Amino acid sequence: MPGLAPAARSALQRLTARLDGVRLLPAGAPAPRWTPGRRNAHALVLAELVLRGASCELGDGREIAVDGMLVTMWRLFGAYLARAVGEALRLRIGGRPEPRDRNFSLDVADRHVPEPDLVHYLPSPRDGTMRQAVVLDAKFKTRPQRGDLYQMTAHCVRLGLAEGHLVHASGRPGAVEVPVGEGRLRIWRHVVDLSRPWRDLASDTDALAESVDTARSTGSQGNGRGGRM
Image (cartoon, rainbow, N blue to C red):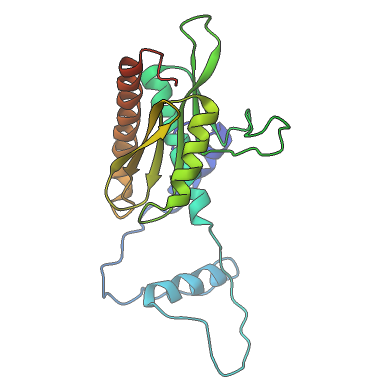
């Protein structure tokens, strides 16, 4: 994960050191034996349930106290892509990434702020003012939905962009062309396959940043207006 704060990076490095010697458990292998202690019992009971594919649901009316952790995966997916792709774009084309950008709204009263996962700013060739050049939204879904196209169309029209980018967790990439007034915009569908090994995600996000930049450059050449409609 690029751009981590030094304190967070240091904490993760300490955690990595504590996990030294941990190995993946082969499928079907018995769960390792362990000795409960004051500091490890709750976490290891939960880990053993996961490894065995077991459940803490009794189904007979009895109650049981368990420890757990809830992760909102669609938020995690969006936050990861915004940070990783934003940093890759910054290194590739410069500018400034803005995850969950709140610097614009859909209405003149500023009541409806859309907050796409990533808006990347680049200096205008006219006066150097930083302007929105890329908009990207992550969707923790396996197939495109009509509402996602409506949402990205609204982002593009509001920002004056000729293309927008949706990123899904699986499926097939593609593109949809949407007529807007006398012109048209293109909504790209990218895929970052979360079933691949996590070490491959860095190269996948770099490839995604390259695709986004290529689409932006092609759009700029196609309409002659810096990628803006």
